[in-house]
Length: 213
Image 1: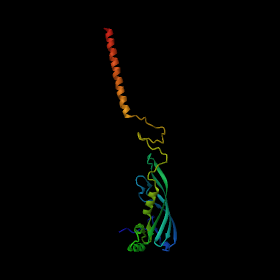
Image 2: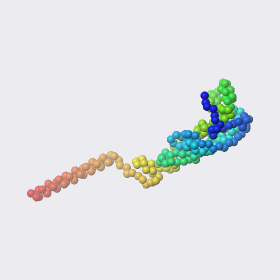
Image 3: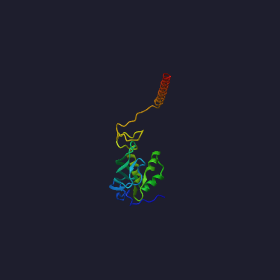
Image 4: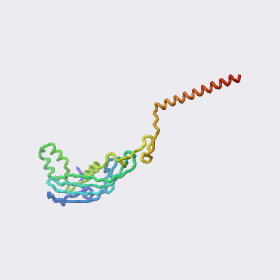
């Protein structure tokens, strides 16, 4: 059995003032602390407890309450290229329908006219004692609004693949590329030159000995 909604939760909203009158409107503004793991895990998100500014428009319709809103917050993460910390101002828009429980139950008792109707019915979230929890909707909206691959700036050069230095700090940084095949040949050439030098030195020594005799 699902736990009952707690009206003291800042992400729980009450719709009783609409009075179930189709066309009735209510606008709400609220600042709420961000719940845990609000964002894309290990990539970017709104820190737990950080303020989230929420603007809501509640509209009573025949089926329930249509909730339209925007959430604003500061998201934190790290650049996927250079791994430096970054911060992004977040604007997440959302819209969700919360149905009246008895309408939802009555709809489930009837045969759906089509598969689309069944899917739509399953997606509607019922109100509980005239209240709804915005957290699941907020989570979905924030994830969609955040970048999957955040960067500190569009032209971030990232890190050097050889030593890991941040390339934006040293634009002229580079490593001399050495083809391992040429390196092997250079080693052979060096060995050959050493042998030749030894042979020459040996020949010179022999000649000197003959002259002494």
